[in-house]
Every structure is written in C-alpha cells, then in structure tokens.
Image (cartoon, rainbow, N blue to C red; front, side, top):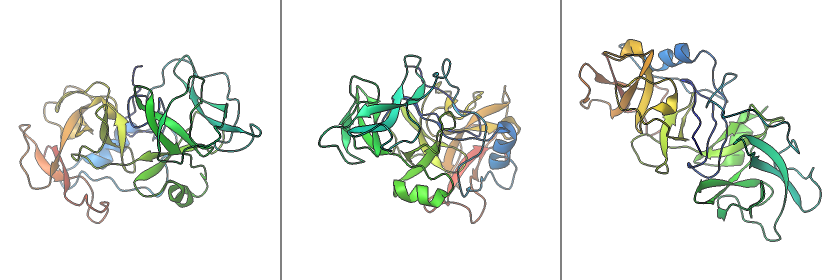
Length: 283
C-alpha cells in the first residue's frame, strides 16, 4: 500500500505501515506555504505557536483514488449498528477510509491493547470505543476514538497522555482517532514513520519519499526522518518552493553549509522538553 502525503501545514491522513492501522486524516491549513513560512522562517526564530485545537480546512495527505460512496454508519464507537455491533473504521478496495458496522467480539480488548486485524472490513477484537490500527503484518494496537469536536480539551482528555485527537474531515460527524504524539530525534515512532510537525504538535506520520536534507519537498512527510519541510526563503540553494531542513539541538553545529541551528519555537511557546529544539536554516 502506498503511503499518502500531507501538505506543508498538514492535516492528518495516516496510512498503513505506521502506528496501528491503514489510513487516517488530520485537519490542516489551506495556505500551506504561507503558514509554514510563519512557523520556520526569519533570522530571529523559526518557531510555530501551538494551537488550542485542531487546524481548520485544507487537505493533508493526498488521498489515493475516489472517496467511497458513503459510510454504513456515522458515529464512531456508537451503538447505531445494533446490539453486538459497533461503528468503526475500515478501508475500501480503493484504499479509502470509511465507516462500517462490524461485529463485536464477546470479550473485547481494551484501548491500547495489542491486536490483530480481522478478515472482514472493520473486523477486530477491540472494544466498541476503539479500532485496530495496523502497524504492519496485520498486527497493531487498539486506538481509541475521540469525537467531541466542540470541546477539543474534552476530546484530548478522552485520548489521555501521549495521544492527540485527530479529526477526519472526509467522514461525517465529529469522528476522530487518538493518535500517538512524539518528539523529533528521539526515535519514538515505528520504523516506517517519522516524527513530523503537523500544525499544532509533533506526531508519528508515515514516511514517503525520504528526501534528504536540502532536497526539495512539497509535503511534510516527503522529508526523511528528523527533517522538516521548510520554506525555500530560509534554505540555501533550495531548488524548489520548500526544502528539507534538519532538526538540531539549539546551539549545536549544522552539517548543511550555510545553515545554523535556530530555535524552532518562539520564546515561551515550546511544549515541555522541546525548549531547545532547533532547525538548521539560513541565519
């Protein structure tokens, strides 16, 4: 399965081979290049402020093929499918995410448990509040649904520490999935994923092109692990509108000629533990 991509200021469209399931989506901003430039350009800072909620509008990872004709159910985790059934996520033959009714097992696994994908769409041993998100070879873990789009803090509380709530713009209702967060340069993501900045925080996102530092990029996850798709204005000799920039520890030396390690976040906006995170860009 080919991994989907995300725009410079991305939304989320997880695809199989990362975390724990074939494909999901996070909201992103439409003005990708402009938004990204604000987050990573200038001589004083390359910071990006943290949003209070999900990003609005705009595509994230480029979807593959046409969207499915319609979901079987609307509210993930609900009982609208009837007794012994759940409304869950599944993949169509065209590799598109949709919502289906699936049977619940008699003794379902709790969210966070290791799981195995079933043969039928949406079939797994997770409870009604979760889906088995594929981590490769048919195995994964039960990721919880979160769906209170009108109260983002409540949605985050549903997910718990170490997860964020990602909304599915292509699906009806307030449907979302609790997705693991990460820190760059810490190797916290599966080998098929990188830790990428997605508009408001760092998340494990599938690797696609693996472009090296300094190479042109058009999507956040075009770049190799521990790189950021930065505006060409702050990347020396960039042959495109944006190029991959390496993360660094502020104050350290950068390998790419013509770049220096500049703080990624504006003063006072960095999440705990990321105060010294930097990006190798033109000074």
